[in-house]
Image (cartoon, rainbow, N blue to C red; front, side):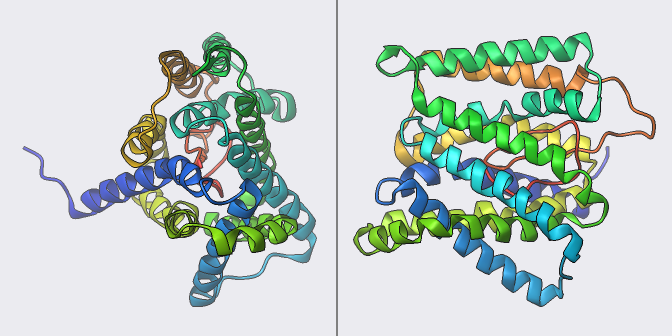
Length: 323
């Protein structure tokens, strides 16, 4: 009989905390939208997250990025933070939390296609089949609103957010060779927050009349899924194989579904749930059998928090939550 090592238990606990925090972001966004406009919400959320990361940077004496990398890091922040969260948050005006999490789960499929085009990475027949299955699932979700079979505009915005996330994963690969995951998280989050500043008038308008519950939800989003969860995820990756840790990210949409039901009493329609499960099946095929083995062992992996799903082309953790 094997005993569980204390380090393994701590890593498992850290993984559970990370999954719960990232999955809760979808419901947190919906809760914040009850008083805040989408632009005001994302600005307040990432002001909180940026301040938290600034404190962490000071305490750990985090180095500043090289001047030559600033333009690229600004672009990464614009795409991966501002673009992703704007699409997700505006999309959640009409798409419930559980359904949004299923749509964001399609990120690995977008990333695999972009890696094929940009990095010349090859897909197996299983990979193509997984992408086709996920597209079918996304189509079902997009047509499966509560009013019956019709197109849900918010679903398109969430898909655009997922595309932004996938572009981020491809572009960040070159920078992950020079910067740690915590540095990339801080740099891109600060950059993304800068591009959100045009929403300051909306925040100044919404904040005085927002309910305490909505404001607490947004502050929670900034502190926990957008900042603290990256620390627990880094702790997890330092103690568990990346392939094992990231495999659990596939259950994030199911956790988001449960949290949104408990927090907001929201539930997807049967069509949305069916489409979501089909997306997960497709993503599992892409992640497990979709790529040809590469020399040098285990592939480098990345995840999206709000998004929080395995990505087959880059390293460590991304700088957002599923958001």
